[in-house]
Amino acid sequence: MYEGAVQELIDELGRLPGIGPKSAQRIAFHILEADPQDMVRLAQAISVVKERVKYCTICFNVSESETCTLCRDERRSDEIICVVEESKDVVAIERSRAFSGRYHVLGGAINPINGIGPEQLHVRELIARLGDERITEIILATDPNLEGEATATYLVRTLRPLGIKISRLASGLPVGGDLEYADEVTLARAIEGRRNTAPSAPAAPLVRTPLPATEPTSSS
Amino acid sequence: MDVSRSSFAAKSYRTRGIVLRTHKLGEADRIITLLSPEFGVVRAVAKGVRRTSSKLGATLEPFMEVDAQIVAGRSLHTIIQAQLRHPYGQALVADYPAYTAGAAMLETAERLTDADADSIAPQYRLLHGALATLARGGHEPGTVLDSYLLRALASAGWAPSFTHCVRCGEVGPHGAVNIPLGGAVCHDCRPSGSSSPAPETMALLAALLTGDWAIIDAAEPAARAQAATITTNYLQWHLERAVKSLKLVERQ
Image (cartoon, rainbow over all chains, first blue to last red; front, side, top):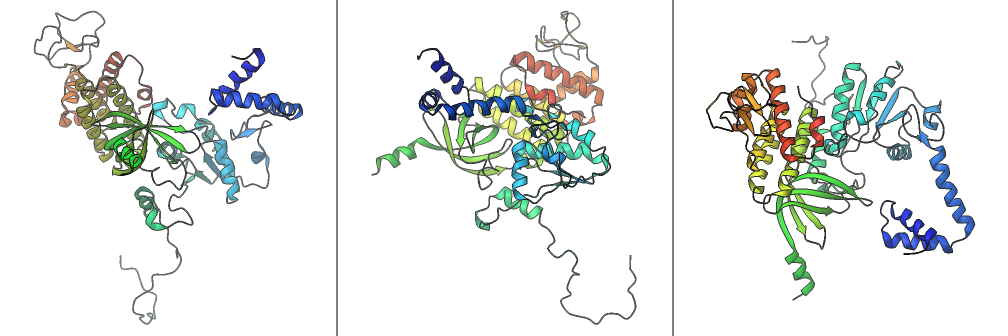
């Protein structure tokens, strides 16, 4: 046991995720020996985060003001909403630069064993947002694991009566890998979710026959 | 002979099992709780399964029956290989009521097998059968769950009776149920605090306990709802702690 302040710091650090008693002690002594200005900056960063950062009232992403920058950005499309589990998923999709619509953060996934049902997520707020007539599509971007899939199933069932197009992120083979190393579940999903690579091209006949002179009438 | 390798091989074992639940661990690992018919509840680390490049990730999800190669460690074991035997999870996530019913089964199975080592093999068979029935579809998920709960409790040594009076043994049908006594009570034995369900509910409860699907599938929604309440109360009475996922089960 150390005296007062040092022990208190060790105890507080030890409560952080992934930090055990020995790590807490090492970090505490690093703080003691480090440049005072650096440590004041760290302390300020922590208190500022707790003071200023809250959740966006529209999409529940982390934000420093009432609404987040993504909800305020007028260049983004209002037509598509991408539903994700957590704020870090917003960042992951933003990094891909493939999406320019709005987001909705659920705050987790349905997990009955841990007592998390639809009521604990921001589902009701999502339905309220869909009253906006500009919205034409919802992309369900929950995690491709069991809880994420169950959440997507629940959302599809709840949102289908609204008559808005609902799509789910594709799942399949990672880019840059070998087919033979894919696991069975992923490979099965990739086959299930295959897409038509030439949607507009007509089926090519094996033997070319001369086109009939008149418009063929449908036989059915 | 290489000493370290032989001891590694001695510490590793192979078992089949149903994944009951998963916890996140560190950056990309998960702790997998597996119910094995030979070893009971096994908690093992699966390394790197949360990465998108992981081949084990899809296999080690709740509801899946797997063949796993596990290495025993000092505190936690480690799963080094796993192969899918039955992908029940795939079918269950596509049907939300079945998913919630399945989650309640997994939570109950973990509770019932954690304490009692003798009944693990029958409990495993019951859970496996119930999950297969849920995944196949055809029956209302709520009734599959109730039937599983009653039979799992019976396997664990808390068999209820809905045909005979639990106090004097008189053959029914009886009109009252007392949860603490363990089932139906006749008119003379009926203690205060017993409930009086409809005769159809008593017949349904007996069918749920024996797995008579012709009667169960023909039951009216009102009888199903009453039977579900009695089953849930009976389970909670014996498990003492609340089963969280039961509240989230969607019944039709």
